[in-house]
Amino acid sequence: MNARISNILSRLTNLFEETIRLRGNPEDKTQFHSRHAEHLVAAGFGFPNWHGYLTAVTAKSERCCGYYLPDTRMIISRMSDLGYSGPIAARCPDLFAQAVTNGDGSTRAEFAEDLEGERLRVSGSQRLAYNSLMHQNLTHDVLDNEDRLWSVLARFGIEHDREAEDNLEISIDMPPDFPSLHHLGQTVDLPITAVYDLDQGSDQEALFHGDNRQLGFRGNLRLKPSGKRGWAYPTLKMNSEPFVDGRNAAEIQGNFQAYDWPDIDKQKFDDGYAAGRAGMTPAPQASFDWLAGWVMVANGANATGHMSTGLVDKALAEAMANASTLDTFSPKDVLELAAQACRSCASTRNRRSLEEIIQEQVDRLD
Image (cartoon, rainbow, N blue to C red):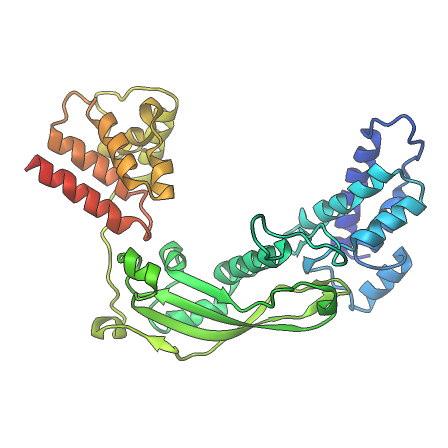
């Protein structure tokens, strides 16, 4: 038995034993046995018994990696046959998913429904819930882990960092019924499009209408079976030439617009932030960087939260209110401190709107 399977079995044994111990049902006389966890693992991966599962692992037809869809019906049926009560058996698919997912990051099993009968749907939508979840997982894995995508973008002067991820939109053409029973055991090819916003979020209206300047690439996302009920993490192939290219002359030379960020020491900012959250008042010798963190959250303010949700006007107002309590600060100093504090928390999506609000405040001072 390899280490990965051993770890999953160990985690599931502990979870299962704890569930039985805390079941709180005196009429349920079933006694936990460690071998029952083996039945649960095998059933979760879609095998009739533990021996059959190990045989598949040895033959490398069952690799226990990537995305997995637990076999809910088989799990419940198997545990019921072993004498566990309905509530305990119904809990077992969740235990399996938790044991598989809480490993070394090599496997996910968030899917807790069976692929037969009525399917779960996104609230207020006809979209299948696990179609949406799989789309989110694939998008996350491409943005975070696919060096092949970022190596193509790097050829055009776009390096992989937080700002680049904020400006990149990933679109995956996924069948509306994926994953379903007929997809199991099949290689699935999904067309993918990656479009970079050359305006870097500065023109929100153009971005909303799709009129922003873009650099776009098409590719293919391939999911290969990693077992009877799962797929390995995706492999990606991207075209090396863009299908849409809105770069200007400077950008073609690799010179993308650079936005000035406040030169604020992050540690000092974080220290001031922590002090503000704790209700502490600034010391007379507190640095500008420390005060920038403090004004964002002191006196019950939530300016950092407002910045993350795009409410830049509220963020700036709350930061200015706190800055105005500092005795030695003039109105101009108050605005500069609050503006720099908010800028340090701005994303590409709200940078332009923040600058517009700051300019309004500058005009009022004049």
